[in-house]
Length: 196
Image (cartoon, rainbow, N blue to C red; front, side, top):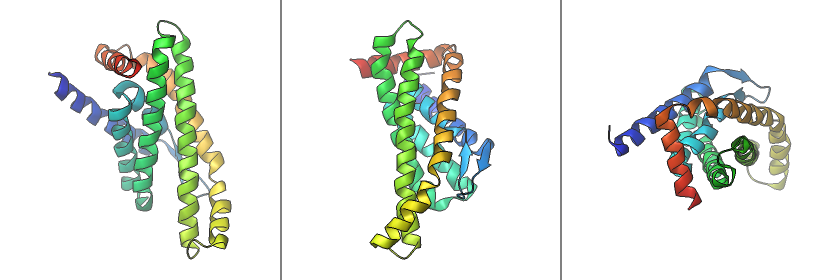
């Protein structure tokens, strides 16, 4: 299989894996959202596919999960937030990969990049839900925005749990995935591209 076709097929697989991981194991929260394990795949998209392609795969897969789960209003925000999560996590991981190459410190690079990416996820949903709640309360007046801030703050702990779970699972899964020669070559190619 030629390289461009391999990249397309692998990207499609990661879109599907991200969507399925998000939908398969999820726990509803009192804030009408849900905690899921899809953030693991979001981080791995940025690491294995590279920041650019990984961002698209993570955004599309996560947005499809919201679409299929009936969270239509979240679809555009989820696409942007998860794409940015994978982009930043992938960039930091691959920049650190050269420094940490050949040692167990790659795990540290994944943890640090995961913290950056998941911080974007938590902050992104906080901002989106603030404006969504304010809009639901009648507009963007100071009073509506204050109510939105309070309402969206309730989802922060649940998003933090989701983010930490995503980081832990990605740390556990990455060494297993990198044993697959094609995936290892893709990740090494992304390392070389983003550390030059």
